[in-house]
Image (cartoon, rainbow, N blue to C red):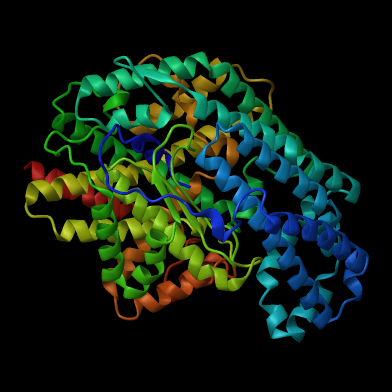
Amino acid sequence: MTPDRLFDATAAAGGRDLGDLPEWDLTDLYPAPDAPELKRDLDWLEEACARFAEDYEGKLGDLDAAGFLEMIRRHERIEAVGGRLMSYAGLRYYQLTLDAERAKFLSDCQEKLTRFTTPLVFFTLELNRLEDAFLDGLFAADPELGRYKPAFDRIRAMKPHQLSDEMEHFLHDMGVVGDAWERLFDETISGLSFEIDGEEMGLESTLNLLTEQDRSKREAAARELARVFGRNIRTFARVHNTQAKEKEVMDRWRKMPTAQSARHLANDVEPEVVQALRDAVVAAYPRLSHRYYELKRKWLGLDRMQVWDRNAPLPMESTRIVGWDEAERMVMEAYAGFDPRMAEIAEPFFRKGWIDAAAKPGKAPGAFAHPTVTEVHPYVLLNYLGKPRDVMTLAHELGHGVHQVLAAGQGEMLASTPLTLAETASVFGEMLTFRALLDRAKDQAERKVLLAGKVEDMINTVVRQIAFYDFECKLHEARRGGELTPEDINALWMSVQAESLGGAFDFMEGYETFWAYVPHFVHSPFYVYAYAFGDGLVNALYAAYQEAPEGFQDKYFDMLKAGGSKHHKALLAPFGLDATDPKFWDKGLSMIEGFIDELEAMED
């Protein structure tokens, strides 16, 4: 997935010829929705889940190391088959979210998997009732079994928040209801229609106009976005109210200390580390976004900036369209320049139908890299328009893809990287591409445009995402006091905007509704701080690379290959970095400050 800047900056091609844009070939998952292989896997999964429960329920405490390892391997196989089914159904749906057949297929698969896997609910419940000494003894007895200890440590972190077996079964079955609210959001977003200068377009195309050179086009797009969001705001408010209330009930029953606690546990990150990140970024607002946007206001020749100027290209920037072949070459050369192995891993994405690049009506907005399952490969979704920022989006998502390929060797239980580290390879991929372009800048003017673009991306990835995080914290806290009207949510949104963007901006009427289209708030509450975490981490990593390049690549690949098998402290130790040190975040932020310093120096 990608941060807000990509939802601000990617959209439909507007008829431009971008070359031969690749489409997904999902046959590596299944040949077709009615394929016999798919039915075979559904049948196998139903039986495998039942047999697993029959063989192990009530017996985990009786297993020796060999028996426990066999159980894990059977559980991983179930995860692999279930993951393959849901990846196929989900990716088909994201290609065309307005297709009723695809939506039904996804919903039917979700319901079947929920039903099939209900017998497995006992697994984590019973596991968390085992004594630490018993499990530690098993892990110590067999190195292959011991490899899985980090996964079980994460499961057991939920031990204090576990409910009765009966309640956990009930919540498992109710999961499909929450999924339905997410689908309502997706289908509402995909179905929105905007009219600009007599032309009807979708959300992506309209958002893309916010990056046009022509200021009147940007204003028209912003006002039309506000009009349509306003017309649908009751639906969006209902989705957010329901999702936040469901989360509040769940958190209360599970005795979670805060609304954010479940995300921190899932991310395997300490709350104080996230708080230190948040506080460091908020304290840096004046040195980062406020200072940069004041520069941009002068460049644009404006007394005051409006929200439609935030992602405007600079006056000296050419309205350049980058064809798909050139974008591929730019990213692949940057990857190969760092290490040829990185380009080798990325190459099949372009050749084998692992990327779906074109922006089409009904396609899911934004961009993401979906890891599917460890025995297949990731798939990347883009809405490629040929803007320079779209090249960075490609570099970002391809970084995810490389990471997911490398981590696959860990197997289903350990491949998945906590969100705080999941953005590392993607942001590093962007940084490599940016640095390669900066090295090739032919003059000071081109360097200035590249630097300004990177600063904007970093502000959108760090400042804006932390502002989003603060908005979510306020939203969930306020919802605990009762139902929120659309106006209540609008006010919470605006409370973080001026603080984060600074005094250069005025806010048009209607901008208060722009929270409505950010999918992370609905799909993954509190996900957004992972972007700021990833950017700060990569800035510190890149500084380490510049200071001591010898042997860095091998350490970097080892980190990616580790997937979710190590805590962030252990992963960063070889680089001499420690995210639990409050000063760690200042290192990352100082890189952004350095770029702004250079831009200011160019003004003299």
